[in-house]
Amino acid sequence: MARERSPMRTVRSTVSFAKLAGSIEDLTAAQRAMLLTLSSFGKPVTVSMLVKATGLHPNSVRDSLAVLHSSGLVERRPISNGKRGRPAWEYEPVVPPSLTAIMEEFSSFAASIADYLHEAFDDPQAEAAKIGRIWGRRVFGSLSDARGIRFLDKSVSGEGRTVRADQLKRASRVVKAARRESAQECSRADSVRSSEESALAKAEALAVQLRFLFSVFGFGARPVADDGRIGVCLTACPFGADKNAPDRLVCAMHGAITERIVEEALGEGVKIDIGVRYPKMPCTIEILLPMTAKDE
Image 1 (cartoon, rainbow, N blue to C red):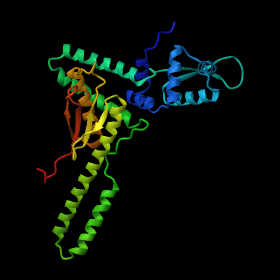
Image 2 (tube, helix red, strand yellow; image 1 turned 60 degrees about the vertical axis):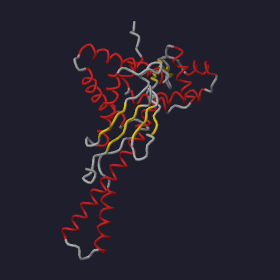
Image 3 (cartoon, rainbow, N blue to C red; image 1 turned 90 degrees about the vertical axis):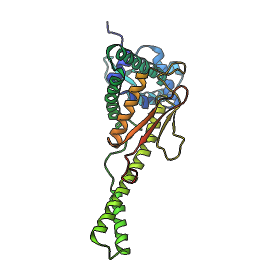
Image 4 (cartoon, rainbow, N blue to C red; image 1 turned 120 degrees about the horizontal axis):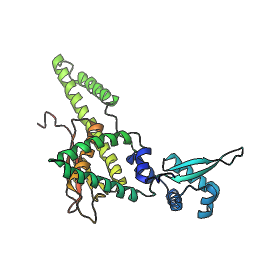
């Protein structure tokens, strides 16, 4: 007799959690309803069984199944009937039908890790941060390929070089008698300014992407309220129960995950400031760009 499959075990072996959450978030209402219907059977089903259960046209059922299968949320297997021609298929969900169910499993898993760290280590906070950073690196790798989530390339685009060349060209027309060393100094200043503008643009874009990511996971992400600050404000916590704060080690892991994602996307010179205030106030994640010589 085949061993019963755990939904979360299937999730870990088939797709990353980040891709899974993004795939469920992208479904239409009809596709989510089809996933729920599939889950209600508790066994593999055919198109004809789904048509009977939903009252939909077979083509509508097939269209929804095609999306669910391509998203990695449903698996299909051919049914052998010993006849020639196109094979019939049976379908079965490989994940829980809702993001809420997945987050409940995920939160329980994170809490279990925290319990273990409390019992096994003298400095569980440091161990939680180590786990979070490793976890963050893996999450970033998954998100870089996930549909609908594209993190910025760390390389500098050609736009900065073009702008600097134009600025130097204009400067040479205005100050024809400038000495060679002065022109070089202008070039360095323009280069620094262009680099700072590029870093700022990337940080702002990353903050938008983080808001999308955290919103998908149930954190109620919003932009930070203060002008001039780049970051994310988290108004809810899927790791907390009944609006209570989660274990501090879970917060440490989540903070380290975020820290590693930012470093992978923007470089190790960029740091973040995390304010853990839930449930009294929303938590905040602020992206801190490297200080320039002028700021210092």
